[in-house]
Image (cartoon, rainbow, N blue to C red; front, side, top):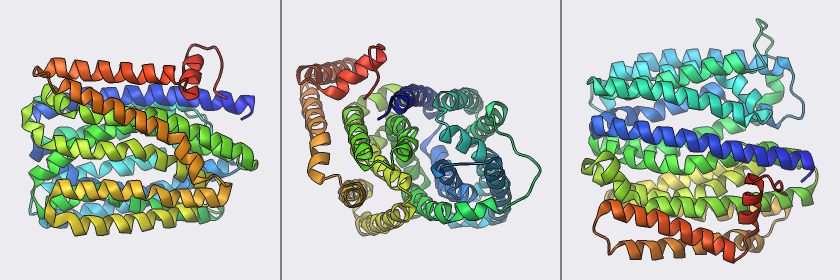
Length: 481
């Protein structure tokens, strides 16, 4: 990696980690207050609508963010065409879903969903105004600025949501928080973005972007369906309440891996794109990113899994205990999820969105088959099968990485296996030690302290290069190589 690219990567990872860590901490704080004030049914009401707003948001964005990021040169006309296209699609989709809201309520046999849906769906329409500015921030690695905007939006929307819940607004408090977050985020993007739209309606630049973006659109649709399928199925086949338990468990897990995912995703594709013309350089960068991801992701997510019981009881009370098994199972997948993100970033940076698209579609179909086959055996079994399917699919992702940049499976396993083995051993030992402690507060303290200390000690003793380089960069002794 060249000096400037090393510095960009290191700075992007640092601010990606700080920004996403701060955002997840804020989400955690506001989430604790909301979970104490609201019921599982309140969360279920919002959760069953998520799949509709997520898919509409995907159509509105249409894959143009990554398409703009992946181009070698981007002009004002490119951003401007994307801006006006996104708004047009967003407005059209909102009108369609506004009309369809009563049918969605009938599907779940819950009339209250009609008005809630019409309000919550405003989020993706408002968000369509921020697609082009987001692409500008992402392409130019403005991670610090993007993080500051998101943090401000979380604070304002979170305080508002908690206040509404405290005054008895129920699920409307969650919906208002969602819409307000998107609104503030979009407004701040407009204020601080160096790029601004003009009143020109030249759509010709879209033709050059469509071959790339259309594949990402189809890919994102399958991704969002897969990510939200459980909430939709549980709300229909079981109860809104059970969908709420799943939503809460998934939310805590997502807060965990989103910090890592956001840190990696904020620099992955732009960095890979800069090195894409030098195969050996790209391979070295990819392997270093893989080692860093494993170094952070495995201990963080497996550690979150072993403290899930204490976290749930202490923070949001025993009424949410049914969501603990959900959280524990999803933490296993969350440990591997950032690795899948690296592979997808690699394919997009190589200009291979077709591989990303078909691989994601095939994975989505495979997941749906697994979910459908395991559905009669209950939620936990369904989640275990889902997690196993996603982990095994990493082998498919690797096949394409090997084909296009020549990286071997042996080298990849050599890069990640030490961190996985050490993390599993540390968490197993920690869990065993804490099992003799009855006090739940002391148990949480022992688990966190012991696991963190052991992992750091082993990384230092085994002279982990990633660990030492991370410390050195943080203390400004040298940058990541």
